[in-house]
Image (cartoon, rainbow, N blue to C red; front, side):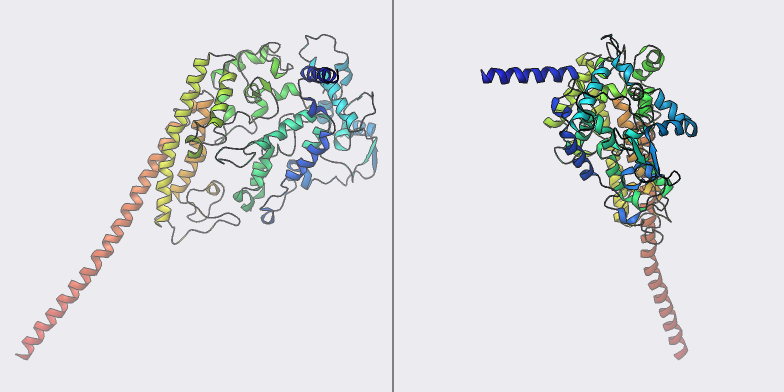
Length: 529
C-alpha cells in the first residue's frame, strides 16, 4: 500500500510538472539559493586580466555586479509609490514601457478565462512565480503578487522602501531568477556543456559565459581605447543580465520571440546570423507573412499551432531540443562560433552525431527528413571546404612569420600591449595596430578566418545563398587566399634576390681585388726591368 501511495504521489508530481511545462525541481524555491550562490561563484568579475584595465562609467550597466553604484543625486529613503510618481515625469519612456507591461498588469492574467488564448499559459506562470516567492518567504502562504514594480527589481521583491543613494541596485540575472527560477536554471545550465575533444572549454561558447569570454580575451584587456572595447561588452553581458533579449522596462516575451530581438548582437562580420536569416527563405516568409499574421504571444511550443508560424524564427530553432523548449540555447551546438579542424575531424563522434540528429528533428517540423539531411550535410561539407582553404593560408602566414620575412618584422614590429602576446595573424590584429604589426598579409589572414570563413559557415547553415557563395563567404575567402599567396610569392622572391645579390657581391669583390693585385704585380715587374 505504501508503495502504491508513493507511486500515486509521484504521478501527481509528474502531472503537475506537465501542466506547468517545467520540472518540479526547478520550481522548488529551495533550489534558488543554490542557483544564486553558484551564479556568483562562477562570475569572473574583471577576469584573469583585471590588472590591465579599469572600467569606464558605461560599464556599470553591462556588469552591475562589479561596477554599479547607486546615484547620489537622490538621497534618503523612497517608498514604493514614490518610484512611479517620480519616474512618470523624469523618465516617461521607462514608465510607460513598465505601465504597459505584464509586470504592471498581473490582474489581467488572473482574469484570463479562455484556455485557447495564447497568453493563458502566463496565468499558470504567475502561479509558479508566486510559489517560488513563497518558498523563499518573500510572499506569505496564499498571498498574491499584486504587481512587479520598480522597487521589486531595483530593491528587493516585496520591499516597501529603499535608500535610493545606498541600496538601489541594477538588476542582474539572479534578480530576475528570484521570480523566474526555471528560466534562470535553464539559462545557467548552458555552463554544463562539455566538448568531447575539448574543442572549447566547459560551458563555452554560450550566453551563460559570454562576459567571462569577454574579459578573459587578452586584446580586450590590452586595448587602451576602453570606449571602443566596451563595444564588445554591449553584447557580451548576457551572463550578467536578461534585458539583452527582454528589453527593459517592458520585458516582453512577445518581443523576445521575434528575430529582431537577436539583431543587436547577432549581426556583422563575425556573427552575421541576423542578416543571413532575414535574407533566407525563412526570413522572407517571416517578413512577408509573419509580421502581420503570426501571434508572438504564443509560447514557442505552440508556435506552429496557436502562433500560426509558417517558418521558423531564430528562437524557434535555437531554444528547441528534442521537442522541448528552454533557455538553454546550446543543446544542439556543433560548429559553435567558428569552424576548426578539431571540430571538422570529429563530426562522426557520437556527441556530434547526436546533436545533428536533434537538428534533423527540428527541421522535420516543416521539412522532410530527406531534405533536412541533405541541407545539413551540404552545410557541413561546404564549411569543411572553406576550412581547408583557410588552413592552407594559415600555414603560409605562420611560415612567413617563422622565417622572419614579414614586412618590417625585424625593424618595425612593436609588441602588442600586455597581456596580449605577439603571433602571426592573431585575433588581436583586428583591434590593435602599431608600425608593421600587423603586416598587410597578416591583416588579410585575420579577416579571412575571423570574417570570411565564419560568414561562409553561417551563410550555409542559415540557407542564405548570397551569404556563402558570392557576396559573402566563399568568393571573399578566395580573394583573401589569392592575396595571401601573392604576398607569399613576392616576399619570398624578394628575400631570394637579396640573398643572391649578397652572394654575388663577395666573389665580385674578390675578383676585383685579385685583378688589382695582378695589375700591380705586372707594373712592378716592368718597373724593375
